[in-house]
Image (cartoon, rainbow, N blue to C red; front, side, top):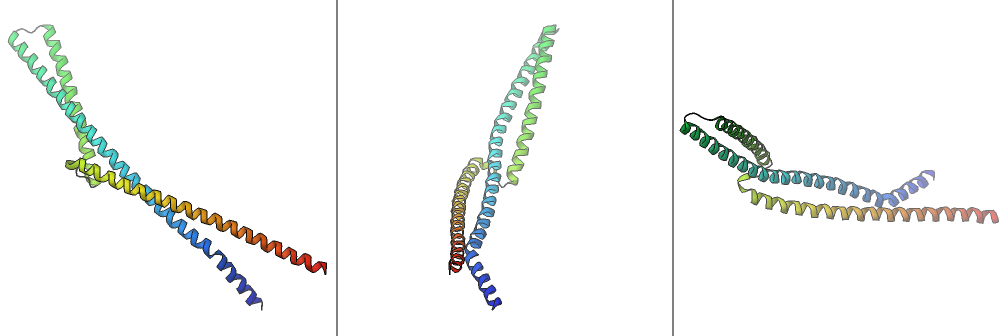
Length: 194
């Protein structure tokens, strides 16, 4: 008899807690999926930032190359002036020295920017981006980010619904427990009255 009562209680508890176990399992699944989607969004955001950096570095390389070419033209012009003068003045020599320094700095800047551009280009290629078709890759990435963001929002909504169901279940269980306690107390009071 004791085993039967105990097994009835166990079955009743299992039956009563089955919905909460299902909700908990669903919630864990949603949490894991949400974390994966958020990580995917983070990676895609990094790729998007690298694409923007690649564009910016490309402009910097072109600008630095233009400055280097201008400085080279200035140096060549000053060298021609010195050659034509026969005996250069101190001003001519000082101007040539300054122009050569500007040319050297411009060349170094162009090289630094080109190296940075190449590095970001390698990172983008490693991420599966064709830098020759950057506009198309940016458009495709924006669409993927939008789809993933929508999926994350749907998962958040589902998680919120699961949390609401759990709160509702907890409230129902609390009421049932309270009713059981109240019923048990009424029985005890009723027995003592007789």
